Amino acid sequence: MRKSIVATITSALTAIGAASAAIPGLVPMPMEVTETQGSPFQIGASLAGASLEIGFAKNQPASQEAAKFLAECLTRSAGLKCGVREGEVKAGVSLVAGDAALGAEGYAITVNDQGVVIRAAAATGFFYGVQTLRQLMPPAATFGPAGTAKPDFRIPAVEIKDQPAYRWRGLMLDSCRHFFAKQEVEKILDLMASQKLNTFHWHLTDDQGWRIEIRQHPKLTEVGAWRPGIGFGMDPKETTHYRADGKYGGFYSQQDIKEIIAYAATRHITIVPEIELPGHAMAALVAYPQLNCNPEAMAKQTMPEGGTISRDVYCPGKEATFKFLEEVLGEVAALFPSKYIHIGGDECPKDNWKQCAACQKRIKDHGLKNEEELQSYVTKRIETFLNSKGKNLIGWDEILEGGLAPRAAVMSWRGTAGGIKAATEGHDVVMTPTSHCYIDYLQAKQGEPRGIGGFLPLQTVYSFDPATGIPEDKRQHLLGGQVNLWTEYVASDAHAEYMIAPRVSALAEVVWSPKARQDWGAFQARMQDQYLRYQAAGFNYRQPKDGDPK
Ligand code: ACM
Ligand code: ZN
Image (tube, rainbow, N blue to C red; front, side, top):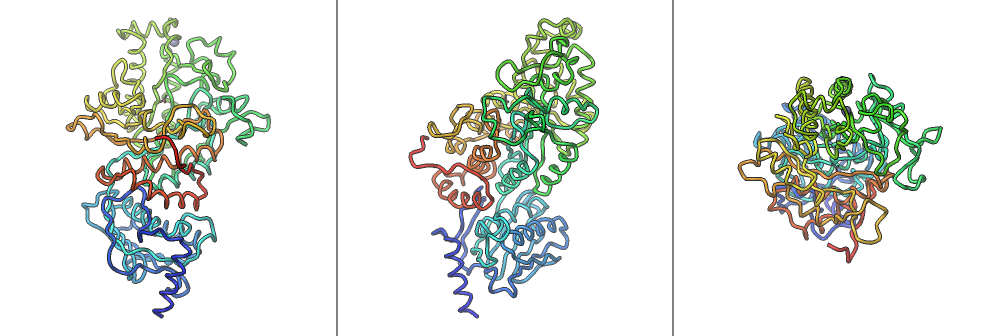
């Protein structure tokens, strides 16, 4: 018996291509990891019929879902039969009610030769404990497609205790400039969950595409979801998202959205939808030109493919604009459980407003000083509406100009000054400065696929500190940070994945791990195992190269 276990361990080691350290590289790095003296827990040959018992906590029904999630991964990838049942199990994985001090997202793991125990105080903590346990297993065992791993491996003896540094750990995807099908969005959500990111900011409307079905305004997707071609000078062959008539685009039906929200919820990810206003609204205005300051001219416009001529703005002089926006946002608020609704607010062109009699009347009637204050008027009105639906408004830092809406949260992208100012004034903020978080920027100075330009290597993302510049006594307003993938120059799924990984893992560590646990050299070493997980999951990524500039 003993002999056969030893033999199995030896063969498993060979099969895994084990790293020199007993504990695989964990990303993001947990708060505390202690390699213990005991023997590893052996899964597979030593268990009758290669099956695994997973027990969930009696007085923590929330742990059942995490148990099932683990079982599904192991059954799919390693063909391991799993029995999920209530109560602690011997020689298996037990999910056990943990101390309240672990918080909503924290967990503790103990692995020894008797099995695995995951403790947490809430559903999300159990889920994250399971994510870390997956990383303690060979990559193919839970990340691989069916049949790629043998149900025969060991989990190293270890004690882990873990809790996140920040509440908002995000990734933004622009589905407007280029469209990503439901399955691709779900693949990205899977990767996010494995890296303990909890907020998917979904950019759903922009000049070049409206991507969410709105029942009261069907032309938004009938017209606004389809443009003549792929646009931005991209190779038409990079995508298959064409309609029978050759138009490029696509949209998510409300049913699609519900399914994606449910998929994300199972992975403890909140989806924050972004409905851009008052600028970046060309697609909506081509569909409904009467909402523009110049309806006659707008009625002649067709859907833009990209470039500088393709930006336009709603007319806030007209009550019809607010009726429309409230109807749209009403449907959005009903669909998404997220507390936050993102209203964009960036890069709003105001020239139309200067020439528009209705806009100028609005300015005069409300005693506004200028067009910046007119944008602020729009944001405040929309905030009041969203609050009436039980939602909070979040917007890009331009919403600070002309006066911030009273309860608005700010997403700081043009550097950190906006976020610092907003936090200092008592507003919640998410930090996502171009300098560290714009993953549409290139990852190296040479040899990269076509892109928007810029330069954001992995190490720069890793050097991000969301708290920089925020006064100590205002830190409670710092929700966290996120990376943003704008997709003007990212048309294919494989390219989107390449831009996301590995930089998303650097961001994940910055917003999850304690500052004292962050170390660039150690991160690079641990990433060698993370690359194997990307590979197992079939997620394209950029493998850093020797001689990459810093
Ligand atoms: C932005 O990048 N325009 C928010
Ligand atoms: Zn106007």
